[in-house]
Image (cartoon, rainbow, N blue to C red):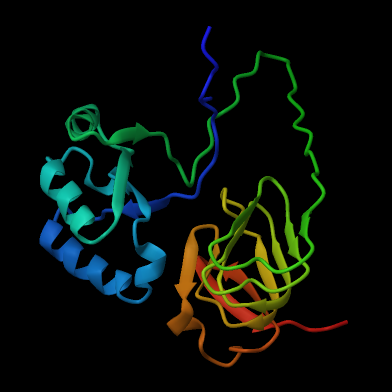
Length: 233
């Protein structure tokens, strides 16, 4: 019997979701190219899932759509929230069909006169004692992330909860990765390439204002990011 040389495991990776609001590929290319130009290194080769919810029942040219995304140096990997016919057409172009819902949760099925009590499980924060260097990615699943050091250019820190950085944030920080809208990012020096909370993100150009280079807190307020001064106790 030959030695096993591989193993298949499930895992969780960060995927960008492209919400398509109109079936207008030329306009999509124009606007997406402008967005990518703001942070080309961040988007280069990024895996993209195409959300079809707003263009359901419409005939999508997946051959053209996939190709324009590739031309923009993106990596289209699948679709979500499409109709059966859209999913079939997407599969023909080697795009996976993924389950994705940002706003809804499946209702729990309970029997009559039965009470279901959900117990919240608390996981202690994941702690990094040192600097997260360029090219590294750290993901704290179902917990907060604490970095006792800097996050360098080209590095990425991700947490399903809050992100605490006791040093300069020069790379990318993503909090509330699985839909926790109350998540926050705390850092001692805001010089980030990108910050994101619950899928809402700002690039470096949008961050370079009053709190640039200062201790800061990033949170989500009414579907928009808000930056405030990090007050020391």
